[in-house]
Amino acid sequence: MATPTEKLVEWENSMIETFASGGDTLGFPRSVSMIYGLLFCSRDPLSMEDVMQRLSISKGSASQGLRQLTTVGAVKKQIQLGERKTLYVAERSLRRLVQRLIDSNISLRLERGADNVRALYAMIPAGPEYDYARGCNDSLEAWHTKASKLLPMINMILK
Amino acid sequence: MATPTEKLVEWENSMIETFASGGDTLGFPRSVSMIYGLLFCSRDPLSMEDVMQRLSISKGSASQGLRQLTTVGAVKKQIQLGERKTLYVAERSLRRLVQRLIDSNISLRLERGADNVRALYAMIPAGPEYDYARGCNDSLEAWHTKASKLLPMINMILK
DNA sequence: GAAAATGTTCATTTTGTTTTGAATAATCAA
DNA sequence: TTGATTATTCAAAACAAAATGAACATTTTC
Image (cartoon, rainbow over all chains, first blue to last red; front, side, top):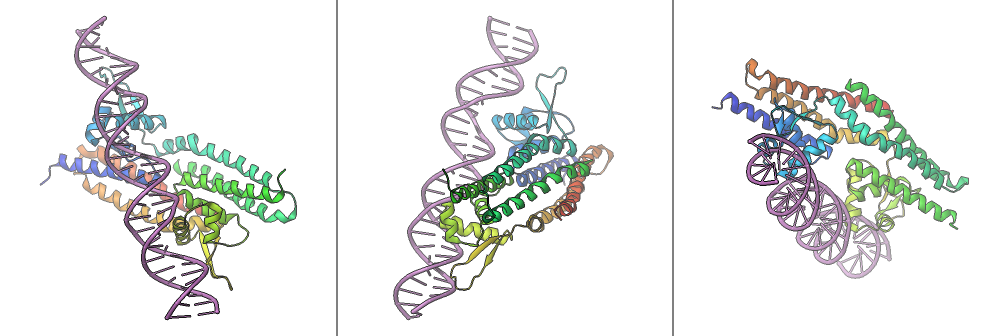
C-alpha cells in the first residue's frame, strides 16, 4: 500500500509525463518539457542539481534546458539569500507564456510572411495570361490574413 | 534578360520555398510541404512523375508524400480519361484543410487531455496538506479549457 | 497472357537533433 | 589567493526522422 507521499511522487511523475508529451506535440525537446513540468508542479524553487537528479538528465541538458526556458520567459531565476545555487521557478500563467512566444517568434514570422507575399506578386510577369498565378498569390495572401487575425483572438481567450 | 516564362518558374520556385519554410515551422517533412506547394501553384493536375522531376525527389518520397497529403485531404486524386497516371491537385481551401487537421488530430488530443486531467486529480491524496498539488492541477485544467475554446474561434475566423 | 507502365514498400543511407560528460569558466567562502 | 562549489560550453555519442532506390506489386494495353 502506497503512502500519501509515494502517491504524490506518482502524481508528480504523471505531471512531468503530461508536459513531456504535450511538449512533444509542440515540437519541444523532451528534456526541456520535462524540466518545465517538474518546475510547474514543484512547491519550492529548484536548483539545477535538483533538476538533474530528479529527472536523471545530464548537467549539459539541465544547464541548456534551463537557459532556453529562462530565455523565453517560461522559467524565472530566483536569487535566494543564503543560497549559493541559482534557483528556478516556472512561469505558470499561460497568458504570459503564450504572449512571449508570440512576441518572440510568431509576430516576426507574420511580418516576414507579408513581405514574402509582396515579393511573390512582384515576380509574376504582367499580362492577363498570368492571372492564374496571381490567383494563387491571392489565395496565399488570404491564408496570411487569416493567420494574422488569429493572434488577437488568442489574446482574448487567454485573458 | 529573363523571359516571362523563366520569371514564372522563378515565382513557382519561390512559392515552393514559401510552403517549405512554412511547413518547417509547423513541423511537416520538407518533401511533403514542397509537394503541396508545387501542386498549390500548378495550373494543371500533376502526376507522381511530374512531382519527382520538378522537385528532384525520389520515387519513395513522392509516393509517400502524396499518400500522406491525400490521407489528410490536403491533396485530391483526379482520374482523367485517357490518362494512365493518377493525377493530383491541391486542396486550397484553408478552412477545409485546417478543419481536417483538427478533426484528425487535435480533437482527439483534447479529449485525451481531459481524461488525463481527471486522472491526475485522482492521484492526489486527500487532505488539505495536498492543496498545493490540487492547485497545480487547477492551473493545468485551466490551460486545457482555454485550448478547447480556441478551436471554435479558429473555425469562425476561417469562414 | 506478356510486356510495359505505373505505383508501393521497406531496408539502408543520409541527414538532422538531442543528450552526454569532460574540460573550462565563473563564483564564492574563508 | 586558494580550494570548493556552481554553472557553461562544446565535441563526440546516441538517437530520431527523412530520403533514397532497388525489389516487389499492381494495373493497363495489345
